[in-house]
Image (cartoon, rainbow, N blue to C red; front, top):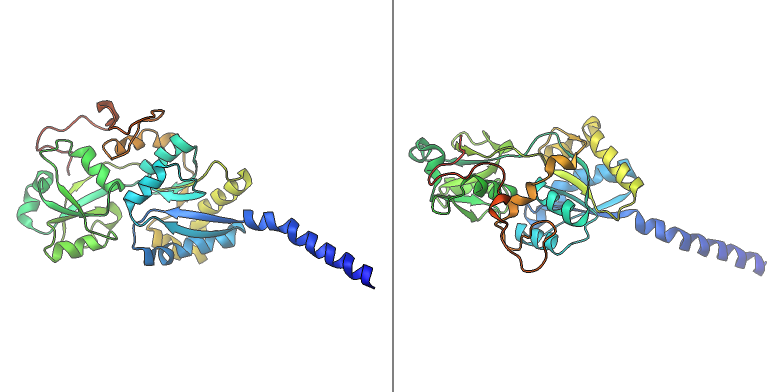
Length: 300
């Protein structure tokens, strides 16, 4: 009797130890951009996490830095993120330096607008916001770097202020008189009829879900397939609503090449392959369009 019990106990313990590595490997972290306050990050991305948990069999936990400056600092430091959902300038930097693998991207490209409430300011168009206070999230969010990619003359730029904790704060700050305009993702254009769009950025490939190079190929494949099928799952509709997208498609990293140079004037940026003291990229790094003359932009 006792030998039988011992053998049974040994089998149970062996099974438990054998299962431990698999259980650990089945849990992953999904890092997202800090586009919401910390207490809202989990609720906003919860539907996506629930969908991935259900459709892949793996378990995901969402996390975000307190702000974009911290997100950028972790990226520069080589943070070994497992899965990340972020805009293209960060993904390209991550891909070039750490070998992150693109799994899926939003159907929509990414673009940003600047909107104001004062008709007199709006009448001047894109040049009307030069020197004006504009609400934004912290740098270097994609909207911020796209603004300075267009308004390249340091003497003729909007004054972006990191006073929003989420994009929807901007209109409220304009109506409260705390700022003169707001930077917003283009998917929010038109949501506030009292605001007038005066500038629109160029469009760049949309937000990317990527995997770190250490993630096993079969896990990457399962997540990529799940993301591309998300829009076909009626139970995952809330995830699309929260992420403000119609769906996901396969992501080609070639489409993102060069977007990391939008970070050229951000503290700590190093061109690909460059080591040593952080420095701004050479003039050629701002490759999207010819430099604007003072007071001139590619506005709408």
